[in-house]
Length: 163
Image 1 (cartoon, rainbow, N blue to C red):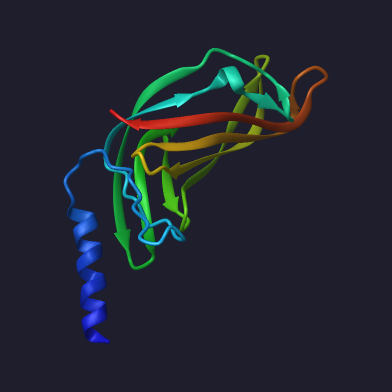
Image 2: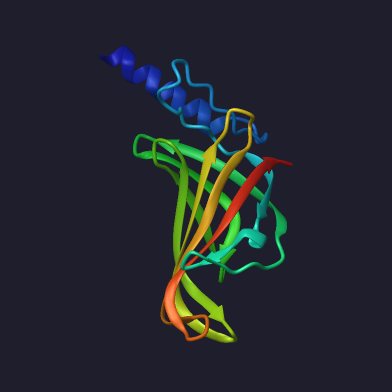
């Protein structure tokens, strides 16, 4: 049992001290499980606002891309990828769920110039080609968005590639 713990500790130490190079390539041995894929280094995140929806209805806008940097650290409690993304100065830290990276954060969403309380969740799933795919889902509370203004969910697809 001691030998197993030493091996696990060595793997955690290797992940924590790995150099900062962009990496997101899962390599499941039997195809049934997705291993934890550390996010380290610079990536380009594209938010496909041209395919954005509000409560399932199209709500297109101009897509945009930005550089995002990640640093992954792992402990016995799990792995966290710290990112350069932030909302009102609060960084988005992504937690490994066993199959994807996920981050959720409360914020103010602006609809037609008026703020509404919201929670933004970003999910990123590693792909075998070294990229990630996911979505940005924002659940907007009262007074909501649209015309008439209603609470709802704004969803935009994401793609992330090493820079």
